[in-house]
Image (cartoon, rainbow, N blue to C red):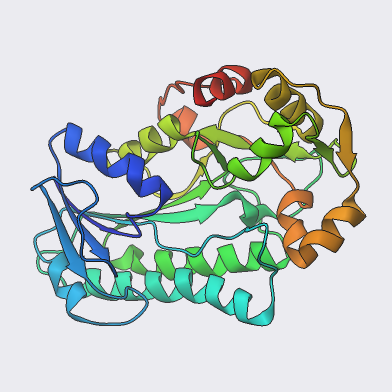
Length: 300
């Protein structure tokens, strides 16, 4: 299979591209950087800014599938959601997806599938509700951003099969969502936050890759929850991380402390979801890491 990717030099792409190569696929990667980080002749680097139309779109010709991973990091401990930051978060996702769909429509022959990034933030703050892919979106900033992102991808349904991957917190040694926790926990001053009872959906990076490959190859269409089948509470997550690092968990950050430190971006840690991967399970996917403890042990 010839796979066309945007955003593949980011975190998920660093795991997904090698998996594609290992099974014999070839990859065309759009990047602002010309260097090939995989140093493999089966990876073709195409310079371009995927938020803008350009020659990179013509490089899609002959591709069997498209994977769009592009998007500025949603939560950064040092970056609040200012107006400018929100605009960047939106444009890096929505504008890129619109350009990818335009390229698919122009390609001859057209790729058979678009697998597009998304996030479980789609659901907003939902308390103890168990959420499968049929649940309605939330109304906070993150939920509405993800909704716009998905709508841009689903505009392509008239020309190709579209799968939107609603991804939970990814666990890996170098995962951007996990690494900010590690220094505090290793020092023995890590802990829970909020009231500790919010539900925390997560997934090991090996299963992220597995579900992307399933979306490429299988009949899946529409939304897919990219999350492990066993979400945990914030307290359970903190204690499992402490156990994996052999450190005590003695502290709790109150919600107001997170608000003072992160501003509105604290919503990503406080507006939480209890997500289950109903469509992946119905398609027969078997998770390599269904339990949090073994997932963290493998990572750390």
